[in-house]
Image (cartoon, rainbow, N blue to C red; front, top):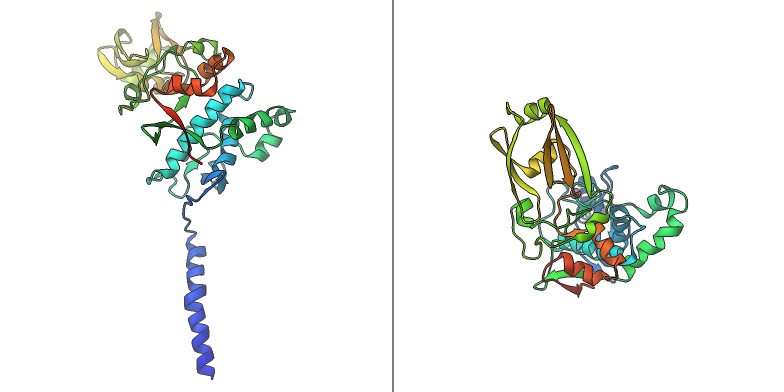
Length: 311
Ligand SMILES: [Zn+2]
């Protein structure tokens, strides 16, 4: 009888307890892709705490729209932002290639890596007096009124990238990242001029230019520009530099710049803010103020696309 009890206990340990221990101890998680009426679940890595949390995509979007676009923007611009962000995240979820920087989470909250995100608790307590009561219903409406809508090209969700402010035109994806996408083409974005970030200047001493670029002469010999106006390459001191590298070296808001040469300094006159590809947020707001709805806005910035319901 004793033997039978021992045998049953060992069997119970091997079949039930051991696998549970292994899962709990290794902390291995699987990324869920179950779809509810609020969309699939999104696993989000909070980059400030290192914690991972799961949200329905629609709930997650409220925190993305609030963090990525000024809530004072027109309701139709916020809706365009919600659909673009939903498409971006949905694409990430259905692609079978998790980001190697965070393989256990679909996205992180670092705006320079994935998408900025504020939790509802943050929005309630950290946004300043009255923000939550004034703006949160508007943010929620932008998500609820477009529930499940995504931007598609030939029935596939697009890579719906966006930026703060264009330079009056957006950029071709291939001019910025090298890979061509048929719906990320340079288009007119005249509303960019309404943005406080439309123009900016940065002054850099010529000695610093020479030191940073490893050249002996701080003189500009010429530019090669993209269709959107960004600097593809610039010849400084007889050497060619990529516009995107110059942007990064000297912390310029965009790669669309003109260099004014002073006696001992370069003045970079910069147009726009961000990579310039896809939807311009300030351009979208200007279109909304002029009467465009979110569908007009999305089909202006993304070429030959349609809107589809994903859930
Ligand atoms: Zn990330």
